[in-house]
Length: 417
Ligand code: ATP
Ligand code: MG
Image 1 (cartoon, protein in one colour):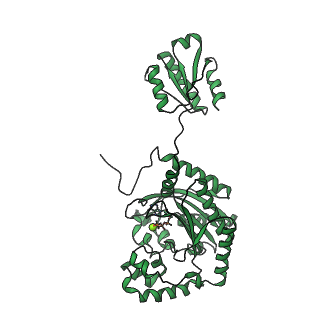
Image 2 (cartoon, rainbow, N blue to C red):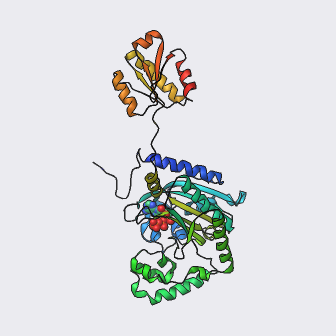
Image 3 (cartoon, rainbow, N blue to C red):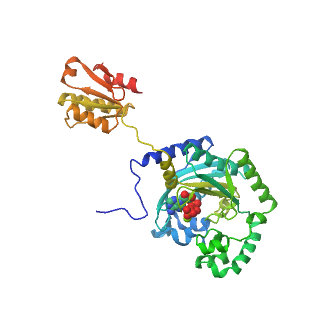
């Protein structure tokens, strides 16, 4: 038997209801905040990711599924969505009509990571991005929108952690201070961090190796190095969040695993998933549109880990698929012929309807209707056919009515729609 590859998974009925609930809630919430959906390719030129996410990040150094595609050169299965959204925004000159655009996109991402609980090689993200607004009100609004969605889904034990990563004007000061500390702690850094502390010291703050975490425990706070503009920006984000009832914690170690962030960076962490505790992450990336060949354009976004959110939601509530509104139970050949055509007509007209063609007994039909969790059963045997009626039973109340065969489909459509 051929089985799926480790790190990949099937989402099956029983689990998919939670996924569908989340997806519907996300679409509804985001659209109320003015977001439009994008559908983007899963494969992009590798360069798009190395240039945006950054050459010294885990993702680009070791996690990308990259292969050669003839004269197209190297292509990559997208590890995240922001780079593609930015590429699309620039390529279609979406800024020309209106620089302010808000998008969301939902789909699979691919990272060659060590498979474990909450960490897959194909996972899903719900991604939201906004272009053209540099105001801190937007940063707060985006975090508020994320919190609203989580609240709608009754996801408990989640909290936003926020930080500011400064801008090209003030971050170098911090990098210098951090580099000094790292140089003094060289002995405790992992190989990766040793290498990165030269080119990209911020990365060390994101390392999960315990000795590295200890080494940076006494690191200077980036917040002490912000320029006035970045500090004002961060203060406003915090005060708007507070005024609007979003709980958050300032975490000066939060740098995120991608290089393109500026100013506000945030993560939503949960206490209910064990080690893989990040449910969503995002931040401002004011330099990325320009860096990828577009105009100077502020932007901010976040990605929710769909798989992890589905796990949290499934812990709090059971969401089951609805059974059919109607199950038609025909007895005998003639009744089966009628049932087949009614079932088709009813389903086509919006009534969730099931029947069975196997020539079952009434008892066996009732068992099947129960198994499918049908709300009503329509019974049709020789006796009913002679009398020109069919018997409709409400499975919950056990009430029963005879309905005339004449115009039956119409009667049922009216009753159930
Ligand atoms: P982590 O710290 O868990 O590695 P990350 O910072 O790499 O997360 P992002 O790139 O910010 O993750 O992606 C946003 C969200 O996508 C994460 O918060 C997480 O919920 C989810 N995610 C990331 N990688 C995976 C994965 N391999 N499997 C499942 N979900 C993932
Ligand atoms: Mg990661």
